[in-house]
Image (tube, rainbow, N blue to C red; front, side):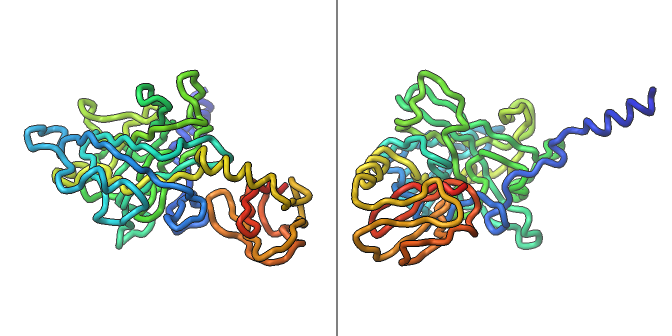
Length: 324
């Protein structure tokens, strides 16, 4: 009986020990989105920061963010220095010219300025944050974020993380690469209109594993990230929030769909045909905004593309394409 119990316990070792989420931005299978991706249709136009302390265990040392203003998070990513620093538990609330809406795949991406460890490129200096959304600025709803980073030992202020061990945290990727967020992953709630998201809130995770100060992921794990960072630029460094689906551009795509350009079959497999008065260019983009095909033909071989949702741009007209 004891031997059988040992076997069962071995089988039941927590999945967390082996769990693998999407890898770093330079690895196959990453979900990282480069700032230059054509998937981005807009950027945050407003940002208010409520900075946290430079060191949550010593509030008298002052708040983070001095010299790293909220305005740095507006517009496209700027890199290492053009960021808004949140400090321990600090909050940034971003607004947009047009509401974010729930399309196919990721709907927006958050940019930080992490960097790879020179001695071990599989490990990255990443300062993490929770992400929440709201339609009214009063009721916020959090993306379920998961970390399988160990929390027996505190990651030091210059320590590193394997991106494969974290999911749905802002700051998962390095500078100029955004972490995508899909509104489908937020629980439905009558107080949240996923097709009219007007606020995105970024909350530094603190990263201290002491139960007096720690924060927890959606599965109850303590979140361990580089700590302490007791200086003005400490905490999550928010660089930008890029919009993939918003009301204004979805309406534009809908209007474009009424023009004299048709694609068939759609859904498609193998080949697609385009009916148009003329064709200057045809570009196909995958769900994270990378161009996967560029041609001027009206009969296109798509057999090499994986199944999924794509955007196809014919001249200046954008349509959705499903490959099965």
